[in-house]
Amino acid sequence: MYKQRKNKRFSYKPRFNDSSEEKSKDSFEAKWNDARRETKRRGSFLTSLPALILMLVAIVVLMYILDGYMK
Image 1 (cartoon, rainbow, N blue to C red):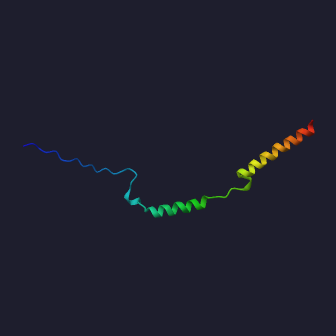
Image 2: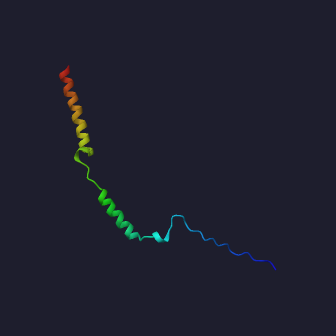
Image 3: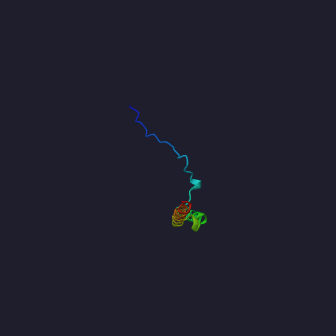
């Protein structure tokens, strides 16, 4: 007598989820670690924080000494 409603089914496919590009988590982590190792650089001593603070203190002391000579 009455038609029963059918459940609606959608064939929704996420935009950025392609099954052809699925990669395992291990391979992604391995590639990430390789990329991190390649880009990791050691900073020089002159750009390190203790060296910069030491240079600042040396400049302040030098300014104090030179100010004494000018007076």
